[in-house]
Amino acid sequence: MTKLDHWQTRTFPNFLRERASTPFCWGKNDCAMFAADAIRAITGIDIASDFRGKYTTELGAMKTIKQVCGGSSVVDAAIYCATKHGLMENKHPLMAKVGDLVIVSNGGTMIAGVVHTNGREVVSVGESGLVLLPITQVTRSWSI
Image (cartoon, rainbow, N blue to C red; front, top):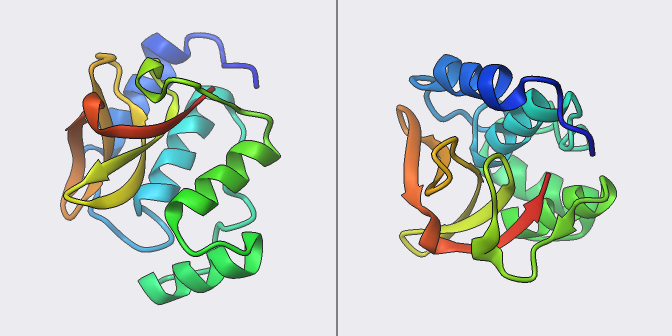
Protein backbone atom coordinates (compact mmCIF):
# COMPACT_ATOMS: atom_id res chain seq x y z
CA MET A 1 0.00 0.00 0.00
CA THR A 2 1.47 3.32 -1.05
CA LYS A 3 1.20 6.39 1.15
CA LEU A 4 0.12 9.70 -0.36
CA ASP A 5 2.61 12.52 -0.77
CA HIS A 6 2.75 14.72 2.32
CA TRP A 7 0.66 12.26 4.35
CA GLN A 8 2.73 12.78 7.48
CA THR A 9 2.75 16.58 7.36
CA ARG A 10 -0.64 17.34 5.77
CA THR A 11 -3.31 14.73 5.13
CA PHE A 12 -2.99 12.67 8.33
CA PRO A 13 -2.58 15.62 10.75
CA ASN A 14 -5.42 17.49 8.98
CA PHE A 15 -7.64 14.43 9.27
CA LEU A 16 -6.95 14.22 13.01
CA ARG A 17 -7.71 17.92 13.49
CA GLU A 18 -10.98 17.62 11.54
CA ARG A 19 -12.12 14.62 13.60
CA ALA A 20 -10.88 15.85 17.01
CA SER A 21 -14.37 16.61 18.38
CA THR A 22 -16.49 14.28 16.25
CA PRO A 23 -18.46 12.04 18.61
CA PHE A 24 -18.64 8.26 18.43
CA CYS A 25 -21.31 7.01 16.02
CA TRP A 26 -21.78 3.37 15.01
CA GLY A 27 -21.02 2.84 11.33
CA LYS A 28 -19.74 6.38 10.78
CA ASN A 29 -17.25 7.20 13.51
CA ASP A 30 -16.73 4.08 15.58
CA CYS A 31 -13.23 2.73 16.25
CA ALA A 32 -13.13 0.60 13.08
CA MET A 33 -14.45 3.30 10.74
CA PHE A 34 -12.17 5.89 12.33
CA ALA A 35 -9.09 3.68 11.78
CA ALA A 36 -10.17 2.97 8.19
CA ASP A 37 -10.78 6.68 7.56
CA ALA A 38 -7.33 7.51 8.95
CA ILE A 39 -5.75 4.95 6.64
CA ARG A 40 -7.72 6.42 3.72
CA ALA A 41 -6.30 9.86 4.63
CA ILE A 42 -2.81 8.34 4.51
CA THR A 43 -3.19 6.13 1.41
CA GLY A 44 -6.36 7.09 -0.44
CA ILE A 45 -7.63 3.49 -0.03
CA ASP A 46 -10.73 2.51 1.95
CA ILE A 47 -9.80 -0.75 3.65
CA ALA A 48 -13.28 -0.97 5.23
CA SER A 49 -15.34 -0.70 2.05
CA ASP A 50 -16.90 -4.14 2.68
CA PHE A 51 -18.31 -2.83 5.99
CA ARG A 52 -19.04 0.81 5.21
CA GLY A 53 -22.70 1.84 5.25
CA LYS A 54 -23.92 -1.57 6.44
CA TYR A 55 -24.65 -0.91 10.12
CA THR A 56 -25.77 1.82 12.52
CA THR A 57 -25.78 0.00 15.88
CA GLU A 58 -23.44 -2.23 17.90
CA LEU A 59 -25.63 -5.25 17.12
CA GLY A 60 -25.56 -4.31 13.44
CA ALA A 61 -21.77 -4.03 13.55
CA MET A 62 -21.47 -7.52 15.02
CA LYS A 63 -23.89 -8.94 12.43
CA THR A 64 -21.95 -7.25 9.62
CA ILE A 65 -18.63 -8.60 10.91
CA LYS A 66 -20.16 -12.10 10.95
CA GLN A 67 -21.61 -11.70 7.44
CA VAL A 68 -18.49 -10.18 5.86
CA CYS A 69 -15.70 -12.19 7.46
CA GLY A 70 -17.29 -14.85 9.64
CA GLY A 71 -15.87 -13.21 12.74
CA SER A 72 -17.29 -11.89 15.97
CA SER A 73 -15.12 -8.92 16.96
CA VAL A 74 -13.35 -5.78 15.79
CA VAL A 75 -10.13 -7.83 15.87
CA ASP A 76 -11.61 -10.22 13.29
CA ALA A 77 -12.68 -7.29 11.12
CA ALA A 78 -9.19 -5.73 11.34
CA ILE A 79 -7.54 -9.04 10.39
CA TYR A 80 -9.91 -9.38 7.43
CA CYS A 81 -9.29 -5.82 6.17
CA ALA A 82 -5.52 -6.04 6.68
CA THR A 83 -5.28 -9.40 4.90
CA LYS A 84 -7.52 -8.30 2.02
CA HIS A 85 -5.35 -5.23 1.42
CA GLY A 86 -1.98 -6.94 1.87
CA LEU A 87 -1.00 -5.22 5.10
CA MET A 88 1.81 -7.05 6.86
CA GLU A 89 1.27 -7.79 10.53
CA ASN A 90 4.12 -6.69 12.74
CA LYS A 91 5.79 -9.64 14.48
CA HIS A 92 6.27 -7.33 17.46
CA PRO A 93 3.08 -5.23 17.77
CA LEU A 94 4.79 -2.46 19.73
CA MET A 95 7.00 -1.76 16.71
CA ALA A 96 4.05 -0.02 15.04
CA LYS A 97 4.89 3.31 13.43
CA VAL A 98 2.92 6.50 12.80
CA GLY A 99 -0.29 5.76 10.92
CA ASP A 100 -0.16 1.97 11.34
CA LEU A 101 -3.37 0.07 12.04
CA VAL A 102 -3.48 -1.26 15.59
CA ILE A 103 -5.65 -3.15 18.00
CA VAL A 104 -5.35 -1.76 21.51
CA SER A 105 -6.79 -2.81 24.85
CA ASN A 106 -8.98 -0.03 26.23
CA GLY A 107 -10.21 -0.99 29.67
CA GLY A 108 -10.23 -4.65 28.67
CA THR A 109 -12.09 -4.03 25.41
CA MET A 110 -10.17 -4.48 22.16
CA ILE A 111 -10.62 -1.51 19.84
CA ALA A 112 -9.10 -0.39 16.55
CA GLY A 113 -7.00 2.70 16.12
CA VAL A 114 -3.89 4.05 14.46
CA VAL A 115 -0.57 5.22 15.80
CA HIS A 116 -0.72 8.97 16.49
CA THR A 117 1.58 11.47 14.79
CA ASN A 118 3.68 11.59 17.96
CA GLY A 119 4.53 7.87 17.54
CA ARG A 120 4.04 7.23 21.26
CA GLU A 121 0.29 6.93 21.49
CA VAL A 122 -2.64 5.33 19.72
CA VAL A 123 -5.49 7.53 18.56
CA SER A 124 -9.03 6.20 18.37
CA VAL A 125 -12.51 7.58 18.89
CA GLY A 126 -14.34 8.03 22.18
CA GLU A 127 -17.76 9.29 23.21
CA SER A 128 -17.10 12.93 22.35
CA GLY A 129 -14.12 12.79 20.02
CA LEU A 130 -10.63 11.45 19.69
CA VAL A 131 -8.86 9.73 22.56
CA LEU A 132 -5.19 8.93 23.04
CA LEU A 133 -4.15 5.61 24.53
CA PRO A 134 -0.69 4.37 25.51
CA ILE A 135 1.07 2.54 22.70
CA THR A 136 2.11 -0.01 25.32
CA GLN A 137 -1.46 -1.35 25.21
CA VAL A 138 -1.19 -2.39 21.54
CA THR A 139 -1.84 -6.10 21.12
CA ARG A 140 -1.65 -6.37 17.29
CA SER A 141 -0.45 -4.03 14.56
CA TRP A 142 -0.15 -3.90 10.78
CA SER A 143 2.18 -1.73 8.72
CA ILE A 144 0.56 0.73 6.34
